[in-house]
Amino acid sequence: TFPTLGRPPRIDSIDREIFCRHGQAVPTQDPAKAIKFASCGRPLPGHAVRVVDELGRELPERVEGRLEFHGPSSTSGYYRNPKATAALFDGDWLISGDRAYLAEGEVYLTGREKDIIIHAGRNLYPQEIEEAVGQVPGVRAGCVAVFGSQDPKTGTERLIVVAETREIDPKAKERVIQTIHETVFSLIGSAPDEVQLIPPGSVLKTSSGKIRRSGCKELYERGVLGRPLPLWRQILHLLLAGLRPQLKRSKNVISSWAFAAWAWGMVFLIGALGWCGVLLLPGGERRFRYAAWASRLLSKACGIRLRLEGLQHLPPPEQACIYVSNHASYLDGAAVLATIPRHFHFVAKREFRSQFVAGTFLKRIGCEFVERFAEEQSIQDAKRLVEAARSGRSLWFFPEGTFTSRPGLLPFHLGAFLTAAETGLPVVPVTIRGTRSILRAGTWFPRPGAISVVVSPPVAPQEIAQELRNPTSFQIAVRLRDLSRQTILKHLNEPDLAQEISPLLRP
Image 1 (spheres, rainbow, N blue to C red):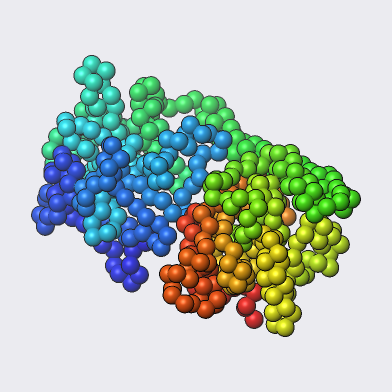
Image 2 (cartoon, helix red, strand yellow; image 1 turned 180 degrees about the vertical axis):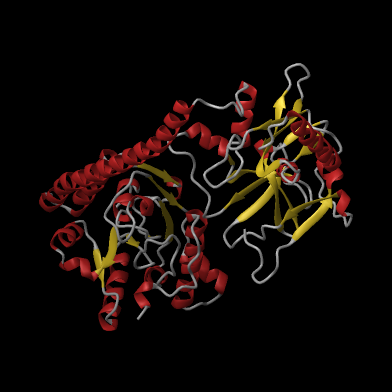
């Protein structure tokens, strides 16, 4: 989300008592009764947010609940932890872990779910109490932790306030504790169950300075919060604290280089095997199947997981069609070879034709080459593609024409869709995800990952013609392009770069 540009921060002042007891954000003008939250703005294009209750049902505006979102910035999950990943999602929606409410379409975060304290039938928000206690004389500002600790006798949460102080005199510390009790009571209408004063530097914080409430709670329940450590243990702790991230970083670097070395070794080994097989085998169909087998072997050797969705949307093997897909990496061709169980012919830029290794391989599996810049040759190539499609060949286009390291779907060129409009062949949109993460443009350093290929239902030119009523081939092509791009963008979960000029057309 992002607030409206040029607008000052929007602060919502709501009734604290109603909000804490009932979760309803009712506006109030009385400062004594108010709790304030700042707006985070509205969802960015391509994103959506919602606030739901414990059963996952959407709540109306100004009712607090669990914040969920989806969009291109959503994570795909925890690394090699399917159980934790499953708990992270509610269908297609990512569970943020935040509490929030919506007002006029804007998002107001109220706190982290794990930090909310349920005390005497009310939801208490630690950050507000911490800020107030931090202003008490004798308390170090920004060094207060408030959390709930389960009382085994009553089964309820006790409100615990932990604050750092430099006071040493017992009477002075008693005055500080009494003032903290009064401050909290005046703020929320009830006093804390326990106030504990600890030496400076005892409240745990993150590297960015945020209070680690869960860490403080753990130490409190173990009875060691604020307990000074011997000097030798402090020095050892500092040494280990500095050594541990260095070891982890070294391990990550070594494993990354090891994977890259192994992956390129497999590329040269299996690539040479595939190239020689395609060169020597007779028959275009047999060479294509062998290339597909080599692609699957390569992905398996590199530990790259392949996933195909929408197999039921593929036309029958005997039905020619026009495949169109997004283009994110040099791995896209190998990915569709390994996953799509159909015989098709890539349409590639003419520059590949003159390359010995890539050009020979592509020619042997029946690739069609096209000119992207010379207008006269480009027209001739377009006519040749139409004839190839009419002869029963299925063609695979990457209508973006190129790819970049930046996530997002570039504008589509019309070539594939004009071929479909001229021949009447259905267009099959295919979405490729994951290849850019494994091998980005501008780098030859591969990384581990997974690739998913999503096949969407075909779009028939005849249906477009009926919808538009006596259209030209160009009008049908434009409609096919727009529908296909919209479908791919929906499954891609990346930004829409339709307004950008294609890199092929930039001066």
